Image 1 (cartoon, rainbow, N blue to C red):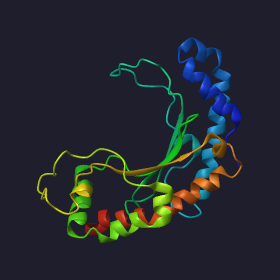
Image 2 (cartoon, rainbow, N blue to C red):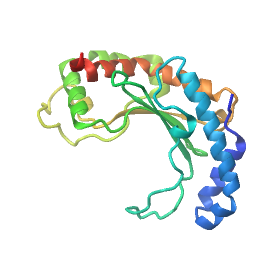
Image 3 (cartoon, rainbow, N blue to C red):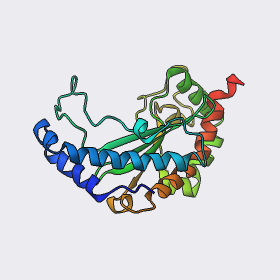
Image 4 (tube, one colour):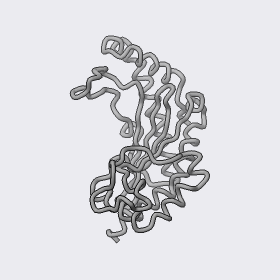
Amino acid sequence: MGAIQKSTLEFLNQLKVNNNREWFERNKERYRTAHENMIGFMDDMIAEMNKVDNIETISGKKSLFRIYRDVRFSKDKSPYKPYFGARMARATKWLRGGHYIHIEPGNCFVAAGFFSPNSADLKLIREDIAHDSKPLKKILADSDFKKIWGTFQGEAVKTAPRGFDKDHPDIELIRLKQFHLSHKFSDEEVLLEDFVFEVVKSFLVIRPYFDYMSEVLTRNMK
């Protein structure tokens, strides 16, 4: 099993305080080693997830985001991200929801859900909540779910979305523009041999939420 190596976190720690092209070029081989470590880890992650889900992302290499930052419209001109980020998409239009893994010393976490739903999907989600929020609330209230994933994160409109009553009893849910959640891991947990399995277990806990959202978002396609 491709465990994350201590040297990968050490590289990221040093990149954070030496975020410039000269240092990066001098340490390019260390970056390649860390990058290969992450590819191997994500290859194993995808293989394990495919035992319990249907993952569209075909390889660890394809799952990883580039470490190079787009600084064109940013005040922060640091050229590199001091972390590795990876995404796993679920296959087919019937299986909704995305998984994200973030490896950054002192700030390692996994996230899952709906980060940027398009306007049509957002409308369907809000309409379903407005009609009957009980199925979603039951999922969110589950003790294992709450322990691992907590509550929704992300942005919300200030009052009520157009077409929805600002006095609706579930307006706090309806106001949301994003429906994702996250779970943190310590650096020590990340370096354990069984970290892949711990991440998979956390993603299994969120499956009822994905099943619910998949039903909401594909109901009219059937």
